[in-house]
Image (cartoon, rainbow, N blue to C red; front, side):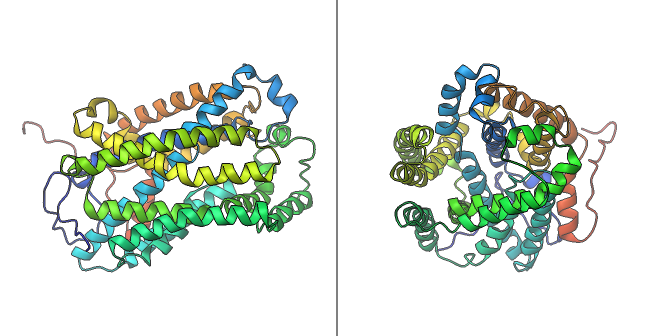
Amino acid sequence: MRHSLQTDVRGQVMTSSAATPVGTNERHNILDALRGWALLGVLTANMTTFIGFGYASDPERDAALASRFDDLAELLIEWLVVGKFYSLFSLLFGIGFALQLDRLQRRGEGAARFARRLLVLFLFGLAHLFLLWMGDILALYALMGFALLLFRQASDRALLRWAVFLWLVPIGWSAMIHHAGIDPAGPIYELAMREFAARGVDLSISPAAWLNDADYLEQLNANPAAVLLRIGDLTYQLRPAKVLAMFLLGLWIGRRSLFADPSAHRPLLLRVAKTGMGVGLPLALVRAILHMNAGDSHPLRFAEETLYCISTPLLALGYAAAFTLLWSRGRRAILSWPDPAGRMALTNYLAQSLVQSLVFTGMGFALATRFGLVFVLLFAPALFAAQVVLSRWWLARFRFGPCEWLWRSATYGRAQPMRLARPVVGTA
């Protein structure tokens, strides 16, 4: 049975009929805070690529500062971060879908408004892909958002069944690749390599060296080939199925408003936290060790990818449930720290790619491969802390982040009010 979202987190009935975005008084602070922490996790995972660790040669890795700590840093990041926070972001997307869809339905609108919102997000993703960085997730989120629309009338039980199925399908996909020798991503990778060569990019020496040397125009020229490489990665991982699975779980959670009154759902949240952390953490640890040691062994890579499909959603849900329980127990002073960054997640996500490109590639200081992986654990929190400070300053003056304002304005077909109203002197 569908559960209609009748009130906001403060218990106030939302009755506005105007076709406008969610206002400040309608925000769910717990979701913004959790989105902020997820943004830090995504930054940490992405920085492992920007810093050069993912594509550097062994001599380049060995020459990096503090490289002797690489194994420990890689273990921690692969164990606790990689996959978990993009899954958490996907979960939050599904929750947001439930909130927005309910609001549109109570206003007498259909799903067309949400579809338009997805189209604008897809354009942001394309711009990110072709103008800045191949690791974009926005375009995939938009495409899977259209798939999510097909489930808006599905029962709660159907949502859960489909979510489990979609996380299990990649295991069969991995078995097909490693045991049957059928790799659908292979031709895409080959096409990407041919496209790099056609554009005069020689990656045979070192991708890290090329990115350090290439200026922005050279990288821009190579980005279509890099996009093909990204499509190959998403195909190999069957990432669309994993993203849609978390969307569906988020839709289920959003229907039940678990975040609005955590105390009312404490037994369920405790079970999810205990199972997610108790089972997910050890499985994720084994998976991280396999990832670091599997090499070209097909059996080991299949085992690693299978454990990823099991441990990642468990741990992401465990993180979310534990966070919600702590929030309900009065730990908000600490947990809400990244709330401003979470309210401007799109702006901050894109800004992270821009800053890292300027710091680590030939677009700017070309510092990729100069630092060992352990520095990600220092650089990522420092950059994110700066984003929290800037986001707090911005939101004290404006209603939305710059990209959020553009997203909303394009969605609603008119410029949205941007500046906050100044308080009237003499009023309470």
